[in-house]
Length: 149
Image 1 (cartoon, one colour):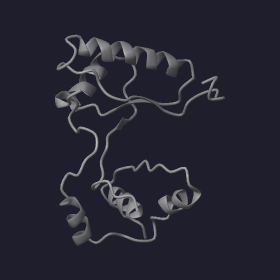
Image 2: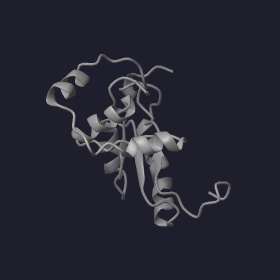
Image 3: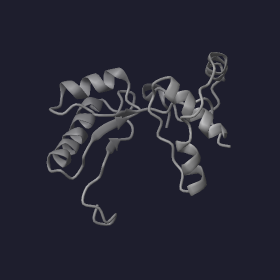
């Protein structure tokens, strides 16, 4: 945080769970990492702690082994990887209508402004269903237990 010039972080995530496919002691690895997160949270250096790409059984094990439950489980969820009322706005609106909180990213002011300009329209049911039918077209592995290195 010193290098970042920050007194605290808003959110800190374990990016990917240790899994049984690669680690016999996967649960202990996740537990010990989480204990360090809990300490940073208790010290006020991090405002929220969570996980990313954890499946239900990973979260279950972590909650059984911890004092503080994960506040976030960030997963990749979008219709394809389109990035061009822009395709990004459609993707954000699609997520909002599914009651999923989108976390769009941009460093360009134009796109940042587009990303927040998604509350003056709704996608029709037909559009939602069409987007739902988009075939898988890349991204991170959905299942950390079956991911290959």
